[in-house]
Image (cartoon, rainbow over all chains, first blue to last red; front, side, top):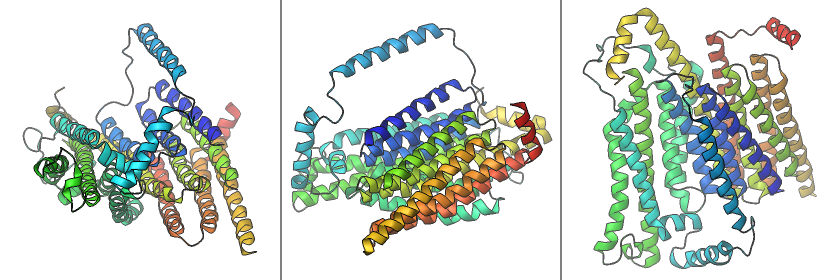
Length: 329
Length: 105
Length: 110
């Protein structure tokens, strides 16, 4: 029955993708991308990959839509047809697709219990996690401890994306397009004049923040972790910015703090890795951080998840402010 | 017992997707996305119990909170676009110069 | 005995919720005008969510899962009508008119 649901959702996914490619109105494409993210999250959920589904739902359907709309406010809404080499690109894409399809003939069947990943890889992690790391969520154990180096790379990729966007789009407050302080245009005040969304939004913001903190610290016991928590906390501040206006949000959490969060998270992660070297063992070896190895692993995972959460929050909020401030320049 | 609800929700999601693809105005599509979102929350909750993993309810809770943000972002987009057009109509040279002065072209 | 009653009641609630959800989907597709579609989608959204989540809560008994489901229900009850209000208000301010006369024209065209 799961297979029937999976096939149905994948069919809807293909239809949505065709709709996104076909339309020339970019606003319609952004809305359909929201549906696309939700369908992917449901597919992940049906395949029992809860951590990934949570990240996809939080980042893809929530924050990406807001960022795309922010970008759309700066450009035009219709796509320009600028392709002269359409047959060439179609040929390239078709041949790449055929090569990938041919490569899948060698894969084991879906869910086959004799596949190598189910015989060797997964049982090893399931066996060794209670022994070395001893947390219920094996995904967090793999992500944080066994494959911590990959996650370090991911955090630095997010950090690089953040500083890249800030370099390209940082607002110029002052200079030629500085408006006199008495006169403010109406486009930066948010939904302050719509009473009902404002009241409901202000009611929700603390709960989203609280839930973000819950997801951050609960990542070792259930679906969750730093990436999801960072996205949720950024979503809370974006909601506040949408209803109260971006200037009040910047007054609440200034850009300096966001820069500090971005940098501090990456430094924290790298620092935990270096602490492993300083205390006499390898880079990113958490066993030496505590009294006994398992306690050290717990401490290490908590610290690096905090680092991940900080960097993701800082980056997503900086990108949002970069788009919104640019619009008001 | 949960299969009937799951099938009904999946069919409704297909109908909402059709409205998102068809809808003549943009508000039809936003309506379809919002409906899709709440159906996703329901589907997360029901399938979590169907698969016997009630600890997956965190996903439904997270998405119930985030779904709201998408619709408000659309509302803010239209409001700020209308405000900018009203600004430009009021003072055409001033706001055009201000908008073009900062951008590299 | 108590289990049987709980099962029957929650099955009834889940089925009713499923019917509401399906009606909402059909309404959103077949209604003639934007505002009638909004009405169909938002009313059945909230009612269907209440029924389905209550049915699942009865199955979960007294546990952490029930509290999480109650929280999901509460947030859906608060945000779903607000989203519909915000959308309808945006559409009205953009100038889309809620008149049935236009719907009658559409019907005769196609």
